[in-house]
Length: 495
Image 1 (cartoon, rainbow, N blue to C red):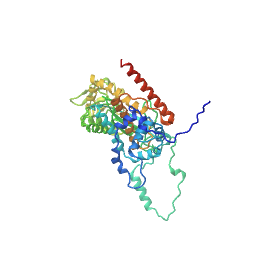
Image 2 (image 1 turned 30 degrees about the horizontal axis):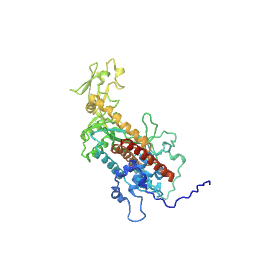
Image 3 (image 1 turned 90 degrees about the vertical axis):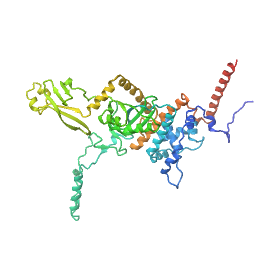
Image 4 (image 1 turned 180 degrees about the vertical axis):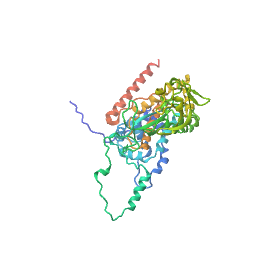
């Protein structure tokens, strides 16, 4: 007799999610390792005592981590992807068929929680890495990367800036003195001021209304657009991230370093670790940055900028340290005259050396050496002794080794953050929100390294739950095959 299969779904199925998530699964390991209960007391201040219950803070933060661990830069996709994965549902504490939070809740809660909440999560993961012996902490490599902001250059509008307070005061007095009964003359179209729609935008003249903190900038190999700058330090012993923070895109590295150093030292001091050495590229070089290293009890390896001139002998000028002056090949002295602040950098000072007009008057090289006023002017950094000290360190055998170590440490980490932990673009608005994104990306990166160190290499994720009973059957079948293979091995090795 011919058989015919009639499908009828079972009304009741005995199923427990934890039984189908392997013991060596990534998210099962993470669930047992990462305790986020500290979020309950730290986020209590953001909620009232009445009204509907919010999303569980632990569930929210776990969903945020899932986004960065899975390289998903969309709240909607985080929720959809999590609902199709048994291991992620187990990590979140949800069962099959249990509805996950709405994606807009993630965005609202991210804005609600302060930066300190995300920083605390990062520090909790950092603590786990230190407790597992992954971080030495004594030597840190520092670097930065431009991360595209969630705003377009084409959307920038012109700033309306009051040039001088006296203008405002004068206009206010004029309005008060006007006769209120006197009719006002209507403004003509020409009174609106010039319309410079074709003028190229700059940070001084334009800003983005949707994200005022984003800054227009570029670097070699990068297009001109709105960015945030991510500053990061990496432990050279383990390549774990020990510090990360968002800065405005046009903020120079050398001005950021004095801000970064105390925070790096603080993160390590929480675990009784003293940071001894900082490795950075030439963008971090400045007198202020070198002084900040000394103030924080650190030694650095930072090459001098390309514009820095250690010696003037190639130009025909020899420096005399005893008299603090230069002497040209014709024997004319250029004594130290004064100190000036650098253009657009009031905290950067230059030492000015100048000859006299009478000394250069009859010089045969006057036309090619002296300026239009008839004398020679040389400009040195007021922090030249600091640059010289740092350059000697960099050019030493150990310094060359440190520079090679820096590039092989921090640059690959930034590559991993951008390509594999969803930091290729900031999907929020504002500097504080961008900082939250960077902290979460760094925490996710450290978690991957932590689990690999503690449990060994990671394995592929299990079959997604979207397959229903078919997916469960496939998973059980693979487990059965593995059991049979292991049983056969035990049988053969028993002889």
